[in-house]
Length: 422
Image (cartoon, rainbow, N blue to C red; front, top):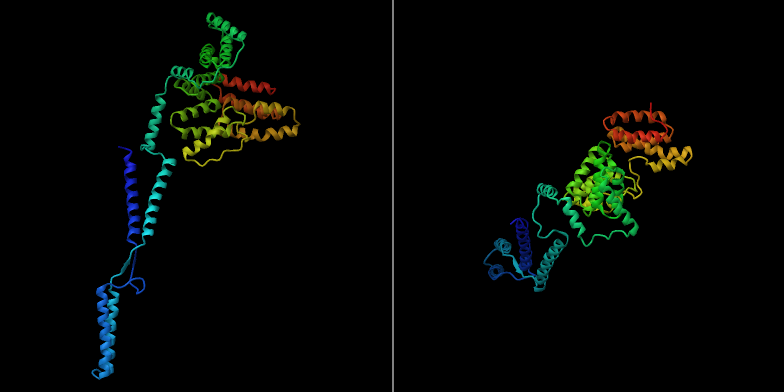
């Protein structure tokens, strides 16, 4: 069983460590006999007494004249050597540790093991099976592939007791909505009518109906469809599924990113999809860059700021959340430009100049979306740098030559700035 690949070695190592500690306390302190802390062994005591008797016997023989002084000294030296050798080879004596110390040691071992187990149970992942990184990625890919269909998610969300109540609406408005639905049933090619239906169904909280109406809008637009139309559809699909990014919604998001790789809502929903399918590390990478490039008032910023630090912990990355009012690097918005119109020339240049240069450098190095090009052209027009704006417009016409919808956004910005290029 996979669980024992961790627990079996962990328990064995813990048991060995505990046994060694307990044995250390039970054996006590091993001391060499120094004449104060313990008594020598009986055999050594007898040997020492013999040598002491021999020394006294030498003194008596010297007094009776049986040995000379030199002989007596030589004998004393030999007996002293033997006495030292006996003392050196005497076994160390053992003094048992006090019973209180043994009990304290055993208690400390038990407490240490209990605290370690409690800490792991609280901070670790008890009973969690072994999952190598490759297996985790494979599981995440399988989870992503096996997501429920949009219709299943919509049904589950419709019956979810935590689903918020729809907004209160006047009966007169509901009657108008019924009339609009009935009218469009007989006029299926009415583009403006389907736009109106999609918008009002969303306002009523009928996001599944809003998504269906938006699909019809996209179908009627055909080649004139813009990225904004796809964004509306993706948002309604996610909302209809209770915030889950389904396979159908992911397909729409992928189409948005093919047309506009820097699209904020699509990048946000892509990160959300990875978080829902077991790849929060990819979510962190996507949302970190999105947060750095987004304006503080972007609708996705609050949710990213509330969750990105936890995502960084999961991804194993040291991350510091930037200040809440940090300016993104996507350049000045239309609101910035309109606000600049009421400023003096110096104030306008100071406000927009730095943002313009940053955006210009990024577009030159990495490219960008049509909205980024449009913002740069509009900002240059406000600053009075008409020639530079014309050059950027010419470059944009080359970059987006095969994308009429993108060119329309950029040309509109040029017209708003008071010129249309050569």
